[in-house]
Image 1 (tube, rainbow, N blue to C red):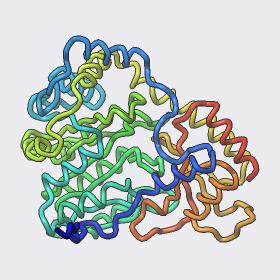
Image 2: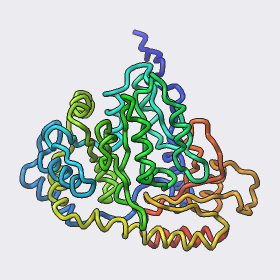
Image 3: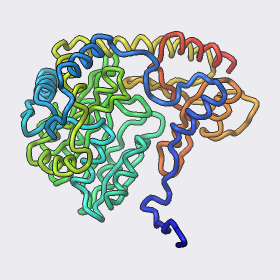
Image 4: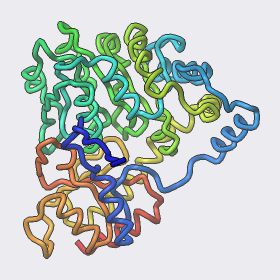
Length: 389
């Protein structure tokens, strides 16, 4: 017998390894301080771990309901009601997911038919475009305003056609740290009002918005909430990104379609962690105090960067800080963002991510992104190296 692996026509021929994987591997190879990939290098609250152990030892280790355990869905419903003033029925309108990335993919698979157009605002998180393409949708890229990363509503209006199925927004915004204002959300509500366009609102950094700013969830606005899938992440909020647990809140009719895909996509999510998170949410302090926790780290990092020739745009939210590299005097001239990040990792010993990786056409505006969700000593070590610039 002549064994042979069949040739496969790729569904994603242009999809390569993500920049996060590439830069993390280079950082490890060079022994650099990794401020590239967006996750904390400090532990979560030990009490949360104790609650997981308690749930495991209580025997809560078998399949939970497909939609998520009731106590967690009820806790999420109460939190949204308290913070954003909108009630979501925990039975029919909240679903627990295997992280926000799965939530977004499942949403897109549930609503996008082949040939449907989906508007994404660039720069954007790297899973959005592949998700749309895997669903057979057509990606319509609309740039955020370079420099400020504010939404350009004239361009959003111009991008809408009869084929537009959905628009995907992200506030606070990865990678820029920009947040949508109340007026931004109201303007979007007005634009979408005469349409049947679905809103996918990626709000995983909702608890990382810095004074005097406020997070304006789609749940705040009746006209947006009625058409929105709102995606949140426990991993970001509680420093447990590896747990991969998130939620989607949406009106019952939208949730019903979401769950049709969810049940055959992942079916369900880790049981003891769901129970632990539900119990942990009984105390709102961890997420209410998170903005101050990260604002201190942001300020520490920005103060150090101010001693370099990096130009610093505002850092309104998330745990990312973008910097403009255009005025740096470095030995290697005219480097692209990606080349600069590799040089920075190899020669200076600090890893970052080029913003061009978040654009489909690799748009290069001489801006890179650092993650400051790190121990103070990690940030100080990185800043000591960056002083050479």
